[in-house]
Length: 395
Figure 1: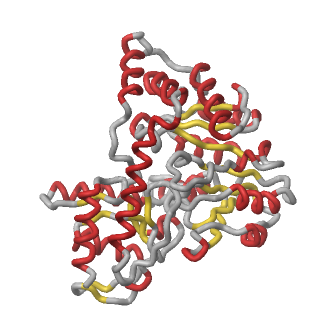
Figure 2 (figure 1 turned 180 degrees about the vertical axis):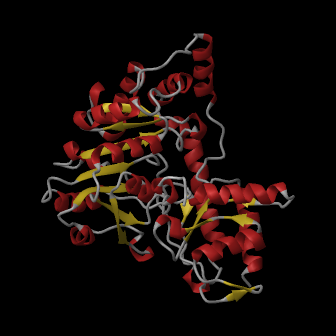
Figure 3 (figure 1 turned 90 degrees about the horizontal axis):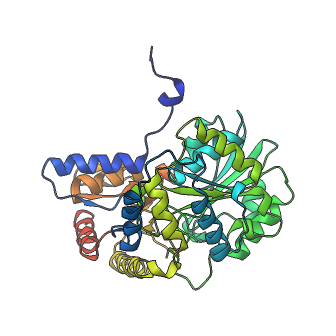
């Protein structure tokens, strides 16, 4: 009999973190692993943000911060939403948390009851399903394919809705596919949701600024009729290379924001005070200050697509945002490579780690067992060497 709760026993380990841990183990054994598994920019946090943190230390910011964030930070979040998304939030509608992941957890805990269904277009970010399940909700996966750039259509959404549907969760740009929903595509989804007024939407926009198109970022909360039914989740980890600073935030109807504040008050309380002061400076800056990172990510994306173009069995589309490729590798299923039979994407990902010494992540963790996720948040030299190694073990 297990002494652990059913809750933790039934929870999956994060596949991205598990692969990163396995890669670290192999490095400790002296193996030269190229890590393309984590969604973490390889840039340093910009100096002007670090300077703000240093100033906060010198100004003796060391006390507990307000549960929902410093007023000055919430004001910066409001400014960001208005400037970048044309969304108008007030102070009570903003909650700052320890990363966007905590924001998502808070939302699930305050809105979901046992049996409530949450629609997840596949592929979805690795933690959505387990966060929903821990809140006793029921994840409802809607399959998409590479032929539609891994985006859910309005008809698919309509077909997935039942009397138990409570929420829709999605990210744009998407982790893991890099897919970007246009304003017109969001309007099509909204035309379905308008007919179901009790369904709420989580719009995860953490990769908002990593957009390689000439189309402006579109927010679901900006679509007619959706503002009061959408929780917009964002943060600074990706665009500002601040993953370890752990600051995320939401803009939401005030009754939802108040509930998240209440939940957070009993779990972590306020986010790290020094990190908050630094994020005020980050959000008040013009987003163009990080364009050099976005330009480099686009160069790497194009490089990786070109390098993989002649590799039989890798079916890829062109992601419009984030920093991932999500190739369909089902061509290799049932084949035996170097004495190892590949049954699925998990086998294939492990094969690349063990034989090519390249860490990727199985698409099964994202709700699509035919694909793997490859992060190109790595140097151009590492990308070239990684693809060279992959090619060597697949011929």
